[in-house]
Image (cartoon, rainbow, N blue to C red; front, side, top):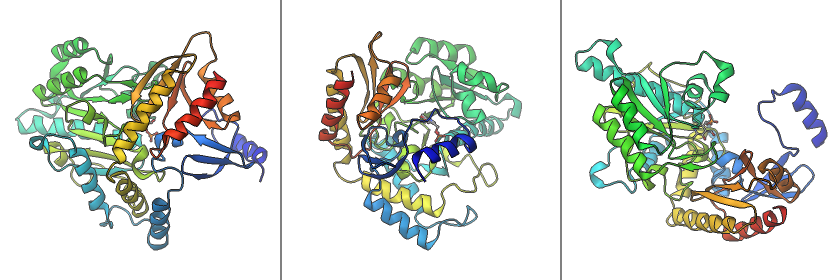
Length: 411
Ligand code: PLP
């Protein structure tokens, strides 16, 4: 079938929830994608930060093929080969770079997407607060239920995660949304303190992205994170880091919080965890890890044999000595080279999660994305004047050079 025929079928039978670009990719290898007409592209988006090992990495292909031929799915009624091991790998990564006194076993719930991982964290925070209230001899109704989120955040498209996504324009059409969320400005410590002073008794959690991705790559400051940690700890509330986009070595370190000097209670992740096979995960430590009992939460597909095989192969490769340092080094190079481009007025981010703002009056980010396709580049624009770069983590400096050379011509 030709690209035209595929595009026509999709427009007739697939809901147009994304504004699709005029291309159909049919093959990939490492940093390279190939379209249905045989043209090659350098991929600086990796399926929105998902294909962390690069396209069709041999270790992932082997692990998934072997598992597919052996057993794909049995459900969560049963133990699953390597699932405990993958959860232990995540626990070790979550404890990496954390003070020895702060280290403890993290327990994970496996889901299928970032939104589901966050749904799990939201339910966990509410149930945890309720159990604490009951243990303290209070009525259920007295339990805190409010979750503090950050303006311009993105936590997913399900109803509860949309309620947590503090972007009124995205929420409006879907009212009424689940209640119990309040947003505060990013990196405004005074506003967060004020909120806790006024409504601290109601707050069961603060939920934030260490680096906001969808808003255009806006990092959280260490001061703000420290304030969130201090204020939640004072109230017995949970600090939840949504690491769906910035976690799993995207910034070089295993998780974004590890660059900010605090340890959260709950961490959600997805995107890069299984390099393209759908998986989300919500991990918790301390008392919070034992919040759920049988029946409190669940998923038919979450943590299936095939997803676990993909996550095991991905985490094994990413945990290899020197991999994090490679991401940090190439990421710093990418930011340095982008900063020197014409029309680029600001570059933000860490590791291989980078945003670049374009000057007013020049080409729009959307135009650059389309022109990029013509020039053999897969780019992304989360906002009208912002480009975002989320390449596979195997990206090398030579790929950055090729990107900058082509992008320089476009700008
Ligand atoms: N949280 C963050 C920080 C994200 O960036 C995203 C997706 O972009 C999500 C949650 C939702 O993930 P998913 O699309 O897998 O549901």
